[in-house]
Length: 118
Image (cartoon, rainbow, N blue to C red):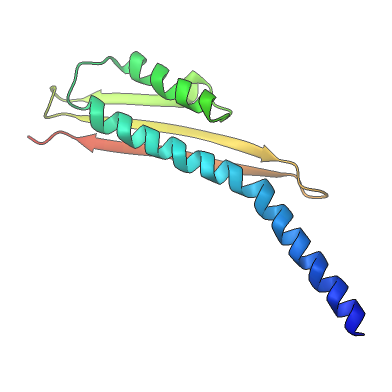
């Protein structure tokens, strides 16, 4: 009886480590991507960088992080005058994870908005 409990305990620990190894990278990449979007919105609220250039910068960062995202999925919207307007960036994507007997699609939405000081 004790041997069965030990084997089951080891199997549970191995399964937990495997799940963490498969699921942690997409969540960590999303965290880094969200941080990059937030920085981009903060910096570009106060300059004249066009929306397409901001979109290209964000797309390049997504490619660096191996995030399955197209340029069309990245929405950049600038409203109001420079310095007192706002910048909204939104990107929705999904990541497919192949788990044994249970394939999974993780849905992510990386979004931020930044308003000018005036």
